[in-house]
Amino acid sequence: MRIKDLHEPIEASQSELDKSSFVGVMLRDTRFEDTGLQSVRFDYVNMSDARFSRTNLSRSVFDGGLLPGARFSNVNLSGAWFDNVNLAGGAIQNANLAGVSVKNCNIAGLRVDGVLLSDALAAYRKN
Image (cartoon, rainbow, N blue to C red; front, side, top):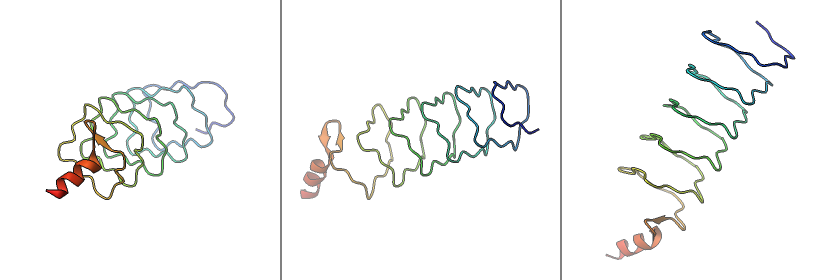
């Protein structure tokens, strides 16, 4: 089915829309609930102010995106991989960082429980 120049809401339920394509389409205030979006691809999509709750994003890849001001609460990021990301000015609290590896990172101003990490590393290396 082809839809072009439609300017009204569409309501779909109990449907299979596999291999559908949406190009140049505005979907403001759209709701996806109990929906399978496995292997879906989002390219050049503005999802600012989007909300994801009770969502399975395991094995998802975020590449070249903008997430400034994004908030992650009650999220399982175990095994997540961060490479060439900007976390400047962010905050991590009440998190399980067991076994996390940090290397080749700019740690200027990084504090852990109020302690400047660069100072702690310098003191550690002296001993």
